[in-house]
Amino acid sequence: MKAVISGGGTGGHIYPALSIAQRLRADGVEILYVGGKASVEAKLAARNGFAFFGLDCAGLHRRSLAIIKDLLTNARGLLQARSCLRDFQPDVVIGTGGYAEAPVLKAAQNMGIPTLLHEQNAYPGLANRTMARKAKAVCLTFQAAAPYFPHADRLHLTGLPIREQIFSATREAAREYFQIPDDGKPTLLITGGSQGAAALNNAAAEAMESLLEQGIRVIHICGEKEYSSRKQHMPKHPDLLLRPYIEQMEFALALADLAVSRAGASFIAEALAVGLPTILVPYPYAANDHQRFNALALQEKGAGILVENDALNGKILLEQVLSLLQDDEKRQEMSANCRAMAVPDAAGRIAGIVYDLLK
Image 1 (spheres, rainbow, N blue to C red):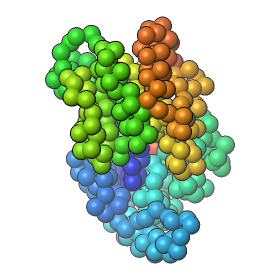
Image 2: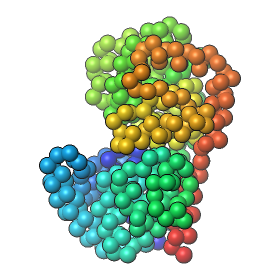
Image 3: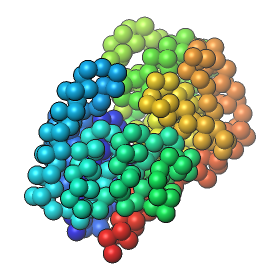
Image 4: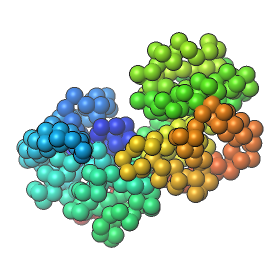
């Protein structure tokens, strides 16, 4: 059996694609990852040992004449995708969102190759909403996304597939990774992802000295762009672990007692899997405000706390963090609610749907 996996642009689309690909590969399926040329997904696919085909693709500038160039780029990508699929001859094409998937899935659907989609967010992205019309199956992370798709009989609530390393990381291994002692200090993880988040970084800077004075260890992932400037202005303290990005996020998750983060679906799925209570600050300019829908889904189940981006500052951050770190019962309740929402075998569920689809 052969399968093409496509999804790219951000880690939120790439990591679920890699998780599905790893699960299928374990069953003996031959995998080809298709994404943008010279892209993040190209690097990560190679790092995980997958063959990769790069094509031309672009997100659409919806309020600019640049959309003409974008459409021409995607038209080239569609032709490249058709050629790739003719050569590889997959049994199924799987997409996890992002503009990189659109030419691949469109070409597959035009060629009569079965397609399956995975939607990470509570509010679906444009690419998946468009491709779902002809998809044979659509897998959802959140039930709240269901009304936005046609063909209710093709929808499957599977959860979001995450990497095996998330489950296997231990606190002992995490302490060794960060080179810190086993001193019993509570650990706070603050992360805006690989790009960072200015609102989270600014609030963290305002609250940092007070957090450290309270005996809290802080892992602060501030993003590549802001790392140099943040490093100059942050306190020099052994309990502040300032990083531009952490590829092995499993160690930060294993060590943390509480997190403050954006509300991207991939991070949420990983936090749910390890039972990590999280203060969620949705990125207000995300497409269709989908991060706010994600955060609301957790808050409604008691697994997270939503703080609006415009309301966040150092004082609010400090109050929320101290309130939760000083209330073990509340955190334990949130942790249990996280685990109740988690779907540990999401990749296995999706693989099963793929096999059923091809029978």
